[in-house]
Amino acid sequence: MTVESTAAPKPRRSAGSTAGTTGAKRTTSTTRAKKSGEPPLVQLLTPEGKRVKNAEYDKYVAGITPDELRGLYRDMVLTRRFDAEATALQRQGELGLWASLLGQEAAQIGSGRALHDDDYVFPTYREHGVAWCRGVDPTNLLGMFRGVNNGGWDPNGNNFHLYTIVIGSQTLHATGYAMGVAKDGADSAVIAYFGDGASSQGDVAEAFTFSAVYNAPVVFFCQNNQWAISEPTEKQSRVPLYQRAQGFGFPGVRVDGNDVLASLAVTKWALERARNGEGPTLVEAYTYRMGAHTTSDDPTRYRHDDERAAWEAKDPILRLRRHLESAHHADEGFFAELEAESEALGRRVREAVRAMPDPDHFAIFENVYADGHALVDEERAQFAAYQASFADADGGK
Image (cartoon, rainbow, N blue to C red):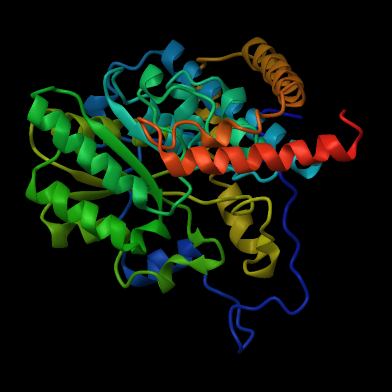
């Protein structure tokens, strides 16, 4: 596998796949943006890898070194390789489900590297790149998807909360945590990740309201990957998503989510606002989900080859590689070493997943209540009796 590979087969156009009952082809996101007069993205690297100036955000990446640029590239490559391995493991029956981040590496790595150690992260279930930036071992992300635990890491060890499956609820958790941070007088910030589909949830609107009223030090980082499962963004909102912040009284900005430098700069700016007591910010990272929503989804049923092809041309990893090569910041030796490292990571992940022990059958009853509960004790006893019945049937084994 090459490190720039999108790690997923190019979707075919299925017979009868249409944008509606008329059978007309759906307008691509890029075309739609041009026709509707939507504002330009904050962009520091073009799809061709050319560095462009931005008077407002250049200062946040002005001191970045070639070594740090190579580090961002390495982060994206290894995250994509881990993600590809997890997808393969699910296809082979080793995981029950997997939510791929394919195509969203720049948004996650850029924003993740903008964080300070004492900042706190509230992810969804797709923030594998942010987890990487927070020092969470990739293999720890897989236990829940294999069904052996409810999350394989201590959230307080890396200031990275457990994955949240309920859509949008983590924005409320982040807001409450940020309100607490402000009351404690800390100068840290909180960031909540969610998708374009979650932006339509009531929980998100409530989080926006409370964060604005209480001036909470929280950044809402929306990865607009164009599709809420099979529902396109234009069926979710009449305005660009970042503009929703205006109605709640705090700023919003749209950044090129396939540009790791722009994602880094804009997130640094938003986090700095939070730490300075200026309240919440909504960042809309305009990106694209190149794979399926999860491994139970078939995107060929609702989107077309030409749309994905247009976004593949803006691939975040290829974009940074072009920049590194044109600026002579990396040579073939660097890329070859990284290729070997990525393959070693894939092997380690596969071996770790297959070695995961089955969970204790009674672990489900632990930590339901802080001080225990009589009903839980009763249910545990009933389950123990049920388990014992199998031993009796097997002759005491």
